[in-house]
Every structure is written in structure tokens, then in C-alpha cells.
Length: 165
Image (cartoon, rainbow, N blue to C red; front, side, top):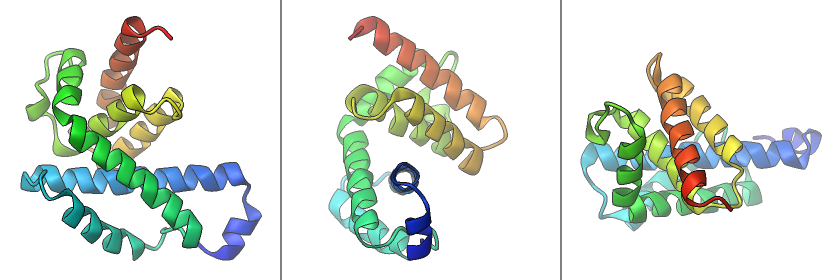
């Protein structure tokens, strides 16, 4: 992102772009870990990913990158640390689908967003779900966005019933 783009857009738009970039980074991390069944080398794999994403054309500059990367780390660590519990909650909400039978992309978009819905009260649920739908449209198959939205909608409703705060 160029400095002129940063100057012409408001802080909310920049924040949204940083968060989108962070979620994409976390999805890349989770996809790689899942594909390679390598959930145990968190620090090494995250360091390698940091180098890769810093070279992407839409990578934020300077402090914006640091903020985005901090969120990428939080999401990646959170999903890794809570993967079994997240998968149990997802399985409860994925009618007629086992988590291990979902596409790798769909499964990790849902994990990523489930973590935000259940463990990140600072993230508005609508924003998390909308970003998940956009990730599914960009990285999934033609029906991914509907599938992801349906599972996450059930998860959010279930979570609100269990914790109505």
C-alpha cells in the first residue's frame, strides 16, 4: 500500500484493510499447517509466513504492517491453541458435515471466524462473518461462501443462546 493511499483514506478504511490482510495471513498459516499436518512448529512457520506476506503487493507499510501482523499472530495462535474445542463447536453446527470432510479452505475459514466469534469480543460478529464470506468467495469453491455463512450463523446463534451477554 502506498503512502498516498494511506493519506487519502480514512482511519476506518485503513483499519479494515489491515484486518482483512491479517485474516488472509492467518488463513494462509492455518491452510499450510492443516495441509502439512504441521501444527507443532508454530514459531518457525509463522516467521516464514511473515517473510512471505511482507512481499505481497497489498502488504501494508510500516506500523500498519505491524498492527496487521499482530492480529495475524493472535488469530493464528488462538486457532492453534483452541483447535480441538473449535472443531467440536463447528461439528455441532455443521449439519451433515464432519469437520475433517470439509474442504481445507472452508474448514480453516470457519475455524478462524469461530475463534473470533467465541474469543475476540472486540471483533464485531457481523464484521467477522462478512470477512469470512469474502475469504470464502476469494479462496473457496463456488458454494463455499453459502456453506461458511450457514455454519457460522448457526455457531453464532448457538453461542448467543449459551452466553446471552
